[in-house]
Length: 119
Image (cartoon, rainbow, N blue to C red):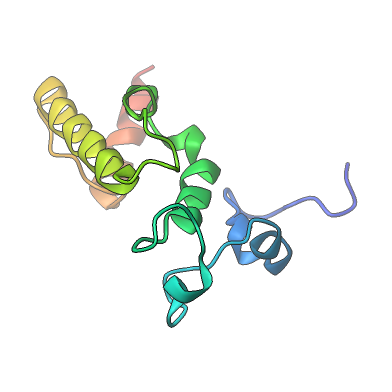
């Protein structure tokens, strides 16, 4: 067992640890004038920090969306391309399963637990 194991929580936000924030050069959206601090390929957008969040959550992004995403961080339309891919995925999900795409809520948890109990 590691000395500093994460315990007592089913998730951990790595960007809540300042050491990682600094190592990833991450500037969150709440920082005033963050556009002045981020120097990346696109002068008008904060792609670098947004891409850090995307990569840290890559395992939770459906493969279909990741495969649609071709531009990479240097693409001028990275954010728009990714957002459009997510919107297409949501519509396809809703058609396929006949349920509305929702973020986690009480009803989703109940439905998931019922599904798990049947298996």
